[in-house]
Length: 95
Image (cartoon, rainbow, N blue to C red; front, side, top):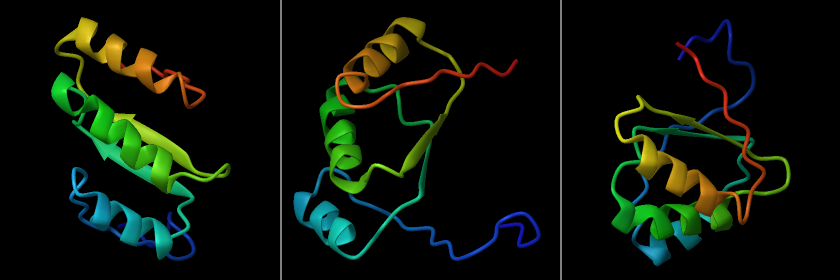
C-alpha cells in the first residue's frame, strides 16, 4: 500500500466468505471504514453469501467498493439489484 496516500491503520485480510464462523469472528474483531471487493460479481450462486458477508461486516460508516471488468452485464446488474435491497448503491463507470 502507498503509505503517502493511505493514512491511519489498514489491514488486508483473507475471509472465507461462505464460513459464517469466520465472518462472525471478523465482524466481532473489526470496525471497517472501507471494504474493497475485486472481481467478485460473476458467480450468481454466491451472491447471497457475498451480500450476507457485507451485511454482517458493514456499519453505517462503512464504504464498499466493487472493482470489476464488465463481462456479463446482466449478471452484474442482477447482483447490484439484490444488493440494493440492503445498501445504497452508487455506480461509477470508468472507461
